[in-house]
Length: 255
Length: 123
Image (cartoon, rainbow over all chains, first blue to last red; front, top):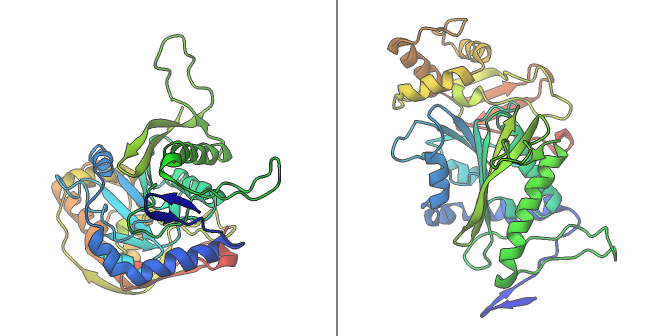
């Protein structure tokens, strides 16, 4: 247990069945608090608004883990210029988003034509998954859901220990290295900067590699740098912090 | 809500079902018409992304025969409005969608399609 100011950070032990863990600590909780949660979650994060503002007219996208669907009507300056479908497991949260297009489903699964979308967003969802493997799977589903030629992805990871959210802590992958002991990550303010961004990037890279996608810029920007090898890949367009969230924007490319 | 724009993006994802897995076939549908704001720029931009045959088939299954069998090349305002209507104003509030390949059934209840699979059906 680490101490963060006056708040205690409890290192949660993930039991042997991550799906059961998520069912108990994420899905059931959200269904119970849906209305209250929704009434506190009405302001979109500025960077998400900006990402959607820059999406070309006529594109369709996926909001994976949409909750109450607050991003679905964006951009507010010209609603209906793009169209975002929301996916979530919680029927009670979805019922609050019913004016938009929502689908009940799991962020770990599919349900879409491969490459059906032009963009996909995952906002404050990844931290609900109990293991690194499952987080990698969620990112793979995002990569698969968008066009291999031009698909854009924004992942936003909530990385604060204060605030009210349903929180499954980042857990280090079961160690296969030195001691064979399962390491749990405890989180403090000091470790969040280095750990969350590194892990989110690793998860993105791992997901890409498992799909045979190269993680590199599509075109070399500087002279003397060779153009990316390979036929398709993922380019990291931007990454950084917005308040207590780490974000990463990735574009798929194909030659 | 299940409108044909959403339906056009869906595919069956049951274990082992990877080809011929869309369009999902509608049955026992209860429909509602709800007006939506017409944005011709969106419809024009989205048109090339539509799986046209799937849209035509699905619209006929739910009783709308207004779309031509081939994706038109000339886009006049009347056509864009008609396409807007088919994609965004017809709501399937109740019913089910069946995979043409493995016949998995995805129910629609209160306008929300349920794409969740049972554990043994997940790939």
